[in-house]
Image 1 (cartoon, helix red, strand yellow):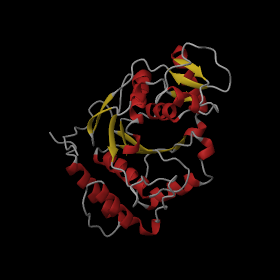
Image 2: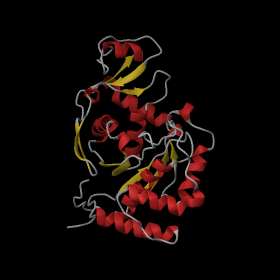
Image 3: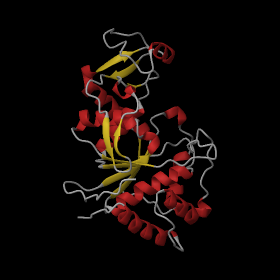
Image 4: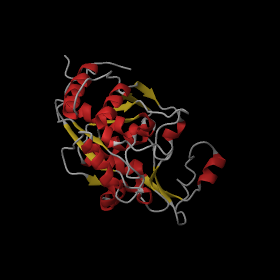
Length: 290
């Protein structure tokens, strides 16, 4: 794990975020990501935002957002600005697609057809326009990002050639793709730093490509270690990971801190833990060091 000095931002205030999907309550892996992003924001004396990533509307579980927000508060992780919901931002995403204009095209290829031609999408529909409905909308990925600098992992090269493919920004079911929504939201919210789980490290290449196209800049990235179960699978709602029990909030936080490499933090209450954890994070990452 790299441990290079991280200077404070000079040109803009640090703005970080935690963006859970409301497909169920937070599990322990989610708490690790939330704590890491929170500590990094507070160590930089910045803002920490929460966004509900419900762009995939069929996956959203009723009232899961309220449960998630309550879990965060019960663990002392309180956000600094109003929570926004992706499901309420369709008009904004539509405007961005209009802005991209000729950089987009329609694709009616099925997953089976794509797999039959290779591991990655081969641009089959790019010069075969128009396509029949239903179709997805793809971005012409002519200048892909294939290397990124991650604060946890260091320099990372894309592990798959698929980062060069023309990726989907609107799905066949006419829902906006996560890759588009997350970038537009981060840019609109002025996010400077993204701290999240390492399962999103490879999708970051597509997202950084869109960042560069839409804003001319890129955020700093830190992809935290994943929490796995006894079989080595990432803790996730799809794998039926157990929800965190807020009755044990302090112990949950202490366990999350060890996953983040902070060691054992002795604290009798959540407020004391948060204060000590911010200090420990600042020391570990030498934030503000000359």
